[in-house]
Image (cartoon, rainbow, N blue to C red; front, side):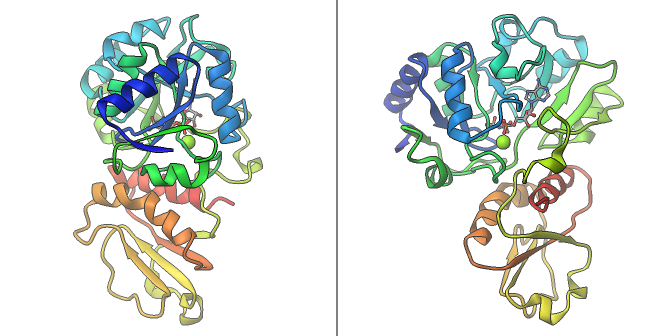
Length: 319
Ligand code: TXA
Ligand code: MG
């Protein structure tokens, strides 16, 4: 059930978390499906509700940066600097896990992914629960992440007793994930803390991949994907009239030649990539239920937030 995130509702949801329940809650990136990270049975419920394979580890959410030392075994200076700069915020760091974090959270890995979200409701909930909260995005495994409470209810409503409504997510794409397990930091998933921002703080960062453990993404049916085929195009002007019929054209920035498409969605009329990212998933969902047979998504330059947008568009197209 969707409930407005009033202080009372947050207190009740925190009590549910303490009792081993599962609660959907807003963060600045996307909505999460949370459970007590120190309670195996509670975390198992997340996997079953999402239909998520047990080899895909979860992110542990904290209310305060100072709590990091309660969930990790060690933390290099570089990671300390990064979280001091960007927490609370859309940044997840992967570090060696503390014993307190059970294997079910990390899919048996000796490392744990951790973040402090920049959302008042999320932080109040985690603080009141008074324990680390494991939370993946609140969508069925493989589908687009939810950026409103209604998105969560549409797909998981029957299975999730409490969906705290904190409005639309400000960032709209999932957190940047950086691993500190190797000698050089590795960017596993691009997000609103961009590669450029990371490198300004850390020096060179290697680009890695974010994939469920048995690194065979091709064998997974899809990931972060709508059901409608999504094709990335460089030049929408080159799409033939017959291909335009019944198809949607999706672009982060304004376009001129849009005749003949069934639907045209411009994510930001002023070309602002922050606005584009914030609306991306809601637009993919809307197009997915609009009956178009095909989505053509126009490529954006892979700089700044453009890297995260292209990453999600590529995943959306991977069927
Ligand atoms: O913005 C976000 O990060 C949202 C909100 C709810 O916080 N959460 C989110 O969670 O996107 P999820 O489960 O959808 O994505 C978590 C990703 C997974 O793809 C997983 O592979 C990676 O984090 N991950 C988790 N633990 C890891 C670890 N120990 N090593 C490497 N990757 C890890
Ligand atoms: Mg997810």
